[in-house]
Length: 151
Image 1 (cartoon, rainbow, N blue to C red):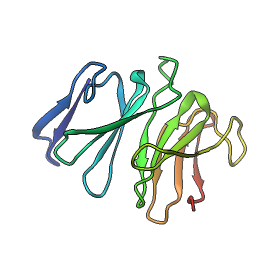
Image 2: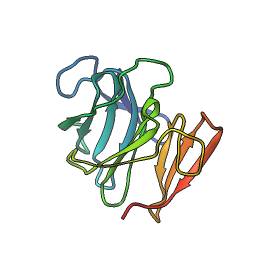
Image 3: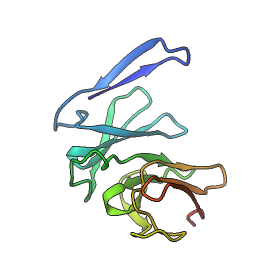
């Protein structure tokens, strides 16, 4: 339940977090995304929130996420941050991607249940490329989707 930091060669540097409900503590931290300035966003899954840490890994803020209810093995949310510091959080059992600004204000959701080119069945991994395209791993349909950038 702690986040560990290593060098590129695998040498341990430090750890932060720990099990709990208070700010800076985590329960099932699955996804992590690091912004260009070193800010880390972490999915605190079973506490149903995203926590934000500065480049020195000190707690900055958190926001609640109205999702991630089930504690199933499939309900593992991952994160990505784009060049505008928008935070993309997968909602596997909600069949969507939740998008927030860097302060936690909800902006939009992407996806719905289904198997067409705009729908998802179990979105897990998410990444944003340099052009802003949203890449989503959807193992429920055995595919990776490339979605258009947000405006």
